[in-house]
Length: 156
Ligand SMILES: CC(C)(COP(=O)(O)OP(=O)(O)OC[C@H]1O[C@@H](n2cnc3c(N)ncnc32)[C@H](O)[C@@H]1OP(=O)(O)O)[C@@H](O)C(=O)NCCC(=O)NCCS
Image (cartoon, rainbow, N blue to C red; front, top):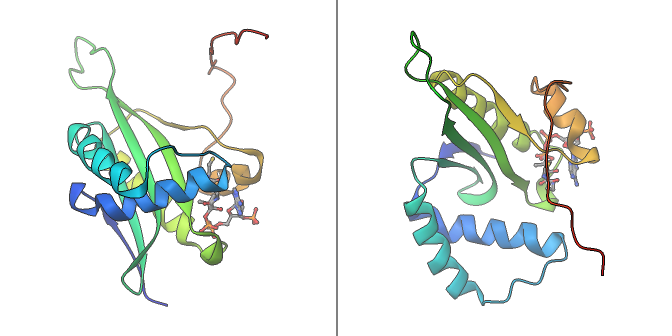
C-alpha cells in the first residue's frame, strides 16, 4: 500500500467532494443535489476559500482515500506582533475500509506541520468521543479556558 499525503487544490474538487459526500452519507445526511451539482459547487467553494480553508488529501495507490482541512484565521494584532494566526481542524475523514492504518494520523501530522510553518498560535478541533484518543495522540489537549457558544435551538 503506497500512501501519500499532499496539499489539495480546486483541481482535486471531485475527489474532495466524493470524500465529503462520504462523510455526509455516513452521518445519515441526505445531500439534496446530485453528485455533479455538488462537485461544481464544491469546486467553486474551494477556490473562493483557498486562503482560509486548506485541504489535505491522502491517496493510496493513486486513489483519494482521506482528507483533512485546516481553517486559518487572523487574530487581532499586537503592537509588537503584527501577524497573529490561529487554526481549526475540520472535516477529517478516511474511507471506512482503510481506517486504523495510520492514514488519519498522517493527515493530522501534515496539517500540524502546515500550522507550525505558519506560526499559528493554536489549533483547535471539535472531536467526537471515538476520535478523542486520535487527536490526543497528535498532541491536542483539553483546555479549560476554551468556551463554546451555540444558539439555543427552539423546542418544537
Ligand atoms: C477519525 C478518522 C479520520 C481516523 O482515521 P484513521 O486513518 O483510522 O486514523 P488512525 O489509523 O491514524 O488512528 C486510528 C484512530 O482513529 C480513531 N477512530 C477509529 N475509528 C473511528 C471512527 N469511526 N470515528 C472516529 N474516530 C475513529 C480511534 O481513535 C483510532 O484509534 P484507537 O482505536 O486506538 O482509539 C477516521 O476514523 C474517520 O474518518 N472517522 C469518521 C469521521 C470522523 O469521526 N472524523 C473525526 C471527526 S472529529
